[in-house]
Length: 617
Ligand SMILES: Nc1ncnc2c1ncn2[C@@H]1O[C@H](COP(=O)(O)OP(=O)(O)OP(=O)(O)O)[C@@H](O)[C@H]1O
Image (cartoon, rainbow, N blue to C red; front, side, top):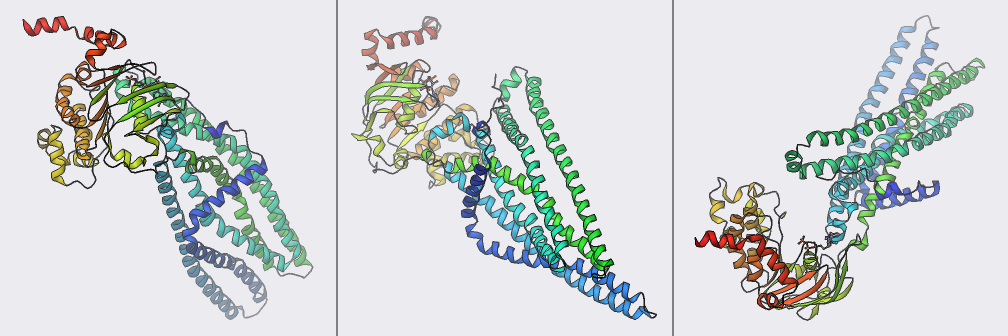
């Protein structure tokens, strides 16, 4: 059964909640890191800021116009011939409002457009950077349970989106509102200190409430992240294991698992929403108290003859300009919390220097393939010790088979030879030079690795073969395909080499992988159970290409296939992570030790007597 993704918490969720000072330090840290990404766009950022300042002034025009309209109307209402003055007032108002609207359209367009441009470019740069970065990471990074595909994807996606929405929220939504709030507040203070004070007082109150709101939401948001990771893990696991799900008729169980996560998610979402509604109501209430205070205060000054009636509306509008952005302050808190939750994980991946493969080293041109393992110990990052004191030699231009029961450590040896992992102790030498001293990329160019399966990318057959040598011509591809005995079958497809490689059978895919290897033409080849996932006919077809690829190269092969094992020149027998026997098939068979035991078991399982009876009548 496919394992159901549990609601594993990511490392961030396991951390205790951050203290206020720690949160501030972390946020500052994230902003500093983000600033590095924003650096190339500083001119656009400056342009956006200038437009924002302009916009904040145009946002005040309505309040002034309204004040002017009310005061003028109050004045001309007392005139015996009010129409002329009225028309003049309307003309002035129309011209001012029209000019302001036209200006606002341009300012708002420019401001939003540049804001979007910053956001989109940042999102692209962050995504690109993290992909380029993780491609340099060691194999252990990919095999760690913390990074299984669904989780890694969620951590990257949410990291990028939380950072970009922080930028979007700041530049497009909040900055213009805050700029206009500041200008409104200055105008309020300049007309009357008390009015200004009412506008000012609402700011700390809203800050306090928004902070409380954000704090209450924090736990729910973290849970939401756990649910999202589990959900995407579930979908990926479903797709990967769909044949098992269907063959065991477990569709309803899988649907049930999904429903459980879904229910938890909906409950959580509803909680988040209801908390938002409650706090919104509190803020509206406080804003209304502020409006009443402004009206009362201005009316008092009007009655004292210190202000005109128009000032009442003028102050109410300015007050609303101040309250509007602060009302939405929780959104900034939300974005900051999101950024603290997700961006930290994102930067943890991006800056995980320990994971970077050390690739520099000496050149590995003209390798012969003399390999020597000396007292090698190896433990996987999860603590499984796979190799203990392993020593043996592989001679160049020969076929060496690693033989052993399942879990003995054969694939682990291959993993160390390709430098996917480094030994904990002991040394591996290639042509008398420590493997660790070689330039890893060049070394891997000289090594071919054929695995059991899983090495066909989505794309055409020709693209898949060309992966062996990106500069190969179409003719080279055909030659390689012929060597891998797949050319005829490819040609029988309607689209030939342009057909999708994923639609090929397992045996055909394996030969595409071998064609790729012919194109790469490395002097050393590792074959890790290359026919294990194939049926007898497919194995037979692949065998021809395998025999060809083995010629004149140093080949290290892992196989449970008796025919391939006896074909090898040398054998290394491994048991529980230790080398127990080395030698030729004949010598080891004579020895009557572990190899004899494994070989006898393999031949017994073939039921040779019955086969020979059938074949020879
Ligand atoms: N990525 C990994 N992380 C942790 N442990 C691993 C990993 N890969 C293999 N192991 C463990 O290391 C041990 C050796 O595994 P290895 O795959 O080398 O065996 P093998 O001889 O190739 O087996 P098989 O013939 O079944 O492929 C096993 O106990 C296995 O569970």
